[in-house]
Image (cartoon, rainbow, N blue to C red; front, side):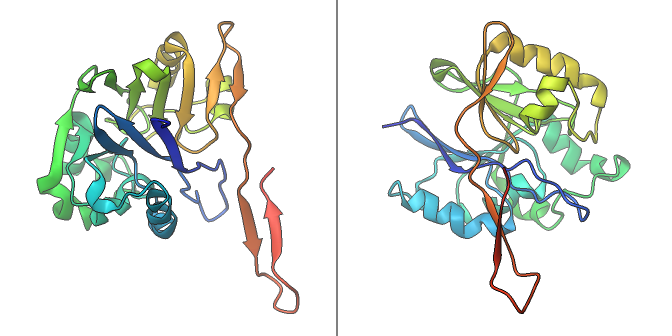
Length: 239
């Protein structure tokens, strides 16, 4: 059994209407627990349920959700799972105090804040939530954006602390509703950690001993365009 399975693959695409919000959604099966790292966006729900069903799992089989942060494209499907939701203390404060309003952050799903409130359990940087599974808080995109270090697998699930490999290679910060200035220190922490990184919205990549970055896998996402009613739908590969 592979302990780490990407149920929905992140896609590094934006548009003039804004980001599409296709993030990595990862199933982690370690220590007898079924952990769901992020939950995807509204349009991901069917694919998420089908992905879980492929491993014989449903919403009631998830032990807890680990939310990298409280943006809609990462948290919205938490509403269909009855389990606890692990969220960094800094991110919970950002939501509870409406810090997102002062930051001009439009991506917090307001209706979910009271709906999920009783299920949220806060975590801190360095906290071990399962044997060999530790929280890594990497603020910047939001005050409490965080990842999950899988020590035995040599892997970091980074959420939007690292949006994609393009940003990471160039030391470009992700869109920041807290501080873009934290990105270099975050990236340095990740480089020191090494291993495999699953970013928020891209293929996983492996960090070499020389700091090089090698993508893992192949981007297979395809957009179907129905722009011309007189013709069959056009498939547009993303790479």
